Length: 223
Image 1 (cartoon, one colour):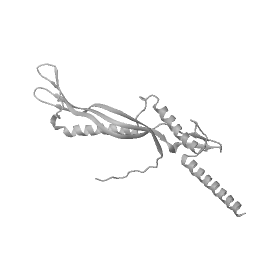
Image 2: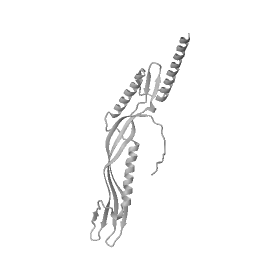
Image 3: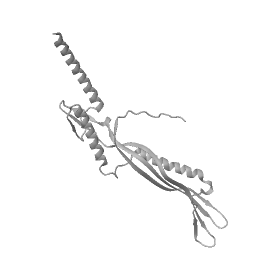
């Protein structure tokens, strides 16, 4: 077994909501089609894949702290960019599944014009096991691609507002601990700083003020 690193990404996120849910997917599609000829007439044979997958997932939502914009006028800070975002699935497990190939056989008898249809359930007709597993893997990939692209919060009323309100509360408390009044806006801030830039410059300013105060105390002590 080997692990190949395809990409490395710098992130700074805050997870605020985890939702446990089930994703159910049913797929029915034609995968083979052929015509068989015999003395009694032509026979059309169609292979249909039927797959049902019930998957248990935990989805996380939160705030991307790198997207925050901060403006400070010395007396307070204004923060924008607090948006609820999908942060991925924390766990994925299959609860139940069933997949098979149904063979639909339509034959035209010479004795009459009626079509006769039969199905093969569960057992792979004509040893189509490889086709069945390939179709199953394609269905699994479709589900994984859907999960990787994001899971909609439409079924959870107020969830997005909850994430954003909680994020604002946590950020407000962080600034209040530093005795900095804070306000929030939904509009972009021209000339705003990222959270990392704001923290770095504030720490540098505090260090400069501390150094200046220490030097002044040394001068007073010396005199």
